Image 1 (cartoon, rainbow, N blue to C red):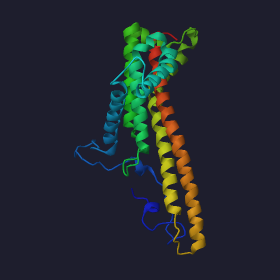
Image 2: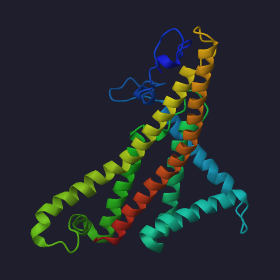
Image 3: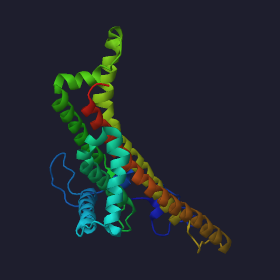
Image 4: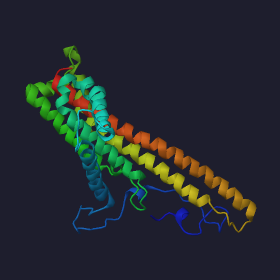
Amino acid sequence: MNVAAWEPGCHIFGDGCGFEAPGTELFNPTPWVDFGLAGAAGVTKYYVLAALSVVVVLAFWYFTTRRAKVVPGRAQGTAELLVGFLRDQVTRTTMGKEGDKFLPLMVTLFLFIFTMNVMGLIPIPGFQVPVTTSLAFPAVLALFVYILWNVIGIRRHGAVGHIKARLVPSGVPAWILPVVVPIEALSNFIIRPATHMIRLFAVMFAGHLLLALFAAAGFYMFNPMSPMGPVLGAVSVGYSAIALIGFLVFTVFELFIMAVQAYVFVLLSSIYIGEAIEGAH
């Protein structure tokens, strides 16, 4: 990326070059393979990291369940703990026992999203970006849930029954329906899938940008050999240490946020599917 603060020799108390904070260029990588087609971005690190995320999830299940026993070991116990948590806190609370049939989907979604988020913390230069900071990935996942929500609702209650359940809340007087129906249509069929994808994208985008800011600031402020003298050189090291501490603290916090955002996405998905199963609301 083209950021002045990361250029060699560009530091505080140095030759006068200013600090330029990281911007959105972090999230627009140059394609490694360009297909030369209009509208096609080519192969970027997002696709590579998404593929790596799939491999990581598959490897997790392989190594935790390949020798499944009645009395689980540590690896199997970790997998069972995750499944049990999502079953008790997500699917059964939103769909009842009928949600057990959707448990494999929710567990897979959680692990896949969390792994894509964690890709922003891997210590490989040039690869440190959460896959979900590319809007295309949250959009595809949200679209999948949206389609599934409609398919389940239509299969359970018919097209008319499903649409009516989403547009006409029970107990609403008939005279106010001309106002309520358009609002419900906008909320359920447009705003819902949009916020489902934007929430995940926006939080991960902002979090990674803040991490990049701490890293760039720490590098910029580290200038122990300042031409302005050893005192300012020592001051620069102190400034850089503060930025480093902030970076480490926020990295731990960001890891927590990554897990929370995967959980929220799965929880909302389960709530939507539960509504489709239930029908009228």
